[in-house]
Image (tube, rainbow, N blue to C red):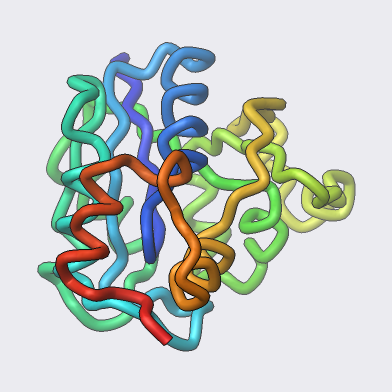
Length: 198
């Protein structure tokens, strides 16, 4: 069965850590493709700092040079709150022959009990769990809540890049460079659109 990875997120902005973990998961798990899915509105985040279409544009620019990466507009076009379970159910219906792998950071997975229809999600998708620097996942506690994760997940150790969109926005607001932290095309787009200014 063909394996395809999904990396969802606000990507506000997308940066090299996103790309690195996607590539790591692709190689380690033998994924034929990684699909980046920008959210329209992330249910566990209070606000976005750029529009869904700006984040979509940055994501397309960021992945342009990797033929194994693609972008889906499924959540942006659906608009409203983006629930992962809705996306996975749609993908399963459209392409039932694919084994879908959600690529998630250990810090995000720690909040799995707060995700909409989390138990259903664990039944439909596999999880590629990337360790997040400075964060210790309470794996036994998570397995107590979601025992099926033991058979439907793989924990991946690297690469450990301590980089966040929050940090990048702060740098941009302070007039500091983000070159070598985001792809050049993304940095140019941010400058052209005058995003994340104080």
